[in-house]
Length: 589
Ligand SMILES: C[S@@+](CC[C@H](N)C(=O)[O-])C[C@H]1O[C@@H](n2cnc3c(N)ncnc32)[C@H](O)[C@@H]1O
Image (cartoon, rainbow, N blue to C red; front, side):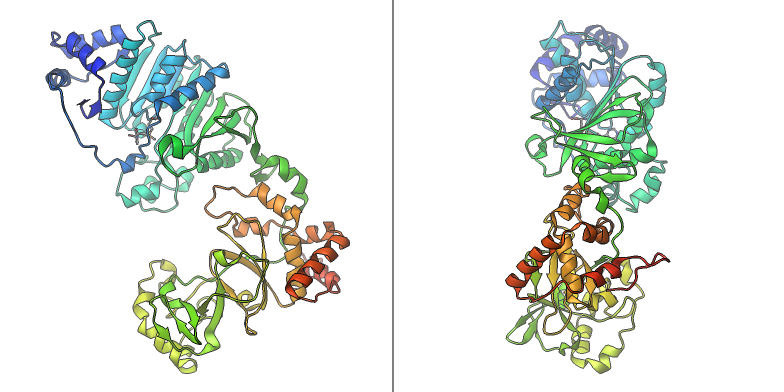
């Protein structure tokens, strides 16, 4: 059964029916609810009281749930909420004041009532009126089942969390033990932008974006992150704790920004939960826990919430470095520096149906299944992330048309020098015009990005940015032409095969794998980015590796891929990476 679009149990509706039917003023009804359950302001006015009395007479009241995407609505099930409060209890946490900033149907409030015996006040805030009712009904249900339970004063406010005055509350109850608990909305500002929603803080400079910027999708941030930071900022000087269920990315950002924010929080923990099981969604989420009013700390221990004995990982700041595994990072930190060669992202065209080609019986076939004849001059083999499985690659499945040698280069030459390619590209002009990204605006026809001298280097070492494989691949020329990579991959290019192979050996060494595992985050959209790859100090790695190891690896590559290479250019390789006195690299590969 539903009242005010909120679920209500039979027990609660019977109770309300029995106790309210003879009460005619909402003030008297509120007094009754306060005396019995401690809930203040149960009804806002007489109209609400009269409506509920009328509706209680009706046995079935089916209302369709509206679309609540903009409210990031994933209600915590009562079993999980209960386990979370028991977990806090096991840490001997027993708050006097409980705050649930976006309380939904109130499962964390009920779990708190059930397990914390010394609560004096509970504050729940919720934007959706039916949930405000449902929380109140659930509280009544709880007390009807547990008449002897401790009855704190409970305030459930129908309000936008961004309008609620938490600072005043922090001042009023400053001497009490606080617990901020809950599960703030799972929604990002760009999702809100796409829904045309205004469920955002109005005036904020959060992450240097105003509420308006957020609406227009400039920069992406999670609303839960904003709410969590507001809670930490407001209550950091209070005695107590915070526990909020948020996406893993929010926890990572909060620990990352802690270096700058230096909030008074310590013993930061990430308790991983199974979101598929708890919420039936495939989003990595966890409980963020910390102690308030402490000397600031800058790392976070990671636990499995269901098997909580020991932390299996610690991430965060180690002096000025932010790393994903502090313990393993310590063993490889010598190679955390600057790569002497510049890592580049691969080629981007955003026009795969036209630009991505297969070769069938000497013809090219595009994504529209059109068979086309093109001059070979501008056609190059191209590899995608999914192709980078082997250690050495010299053949590609796909081909692409490389219209420019560097970004912004004029493309008029194609008409005279490559008439078939020109005819083909112009016949698909509309596909190029339909490219959404503004980077193509006011650029020469058929422009591409991620192209430069480095793209035409014959030997490359590459890795997929998307896959968590920690494995680098050597790419050899195909039919005497350099092979391209798409923009999901990162590469360094070399003129000499020896330099590429020496780099490959260093990059696939155990030290590099361990280093990369210590600085990359499994839940990041891209495991590897240019920034991460630029941290690998190849020169330091080259100094650490023993000649015996080098010989062994080279022998293996020679045998497996028939390369026939020696270490005779090793000293040149070291020289090429060593900065000369003016800080530049001696020579480029
Ligand atoms: C992820 S749900 C969790 C609800 C509850 N905390 C729980 O753990 O079950 C997020 C809740 O935030 C509410 N909400 C979304 N935007 C809000 C806002 N601006 N102010 C207050 N509540 C909001 C939603 O209606 C929803 O009930």
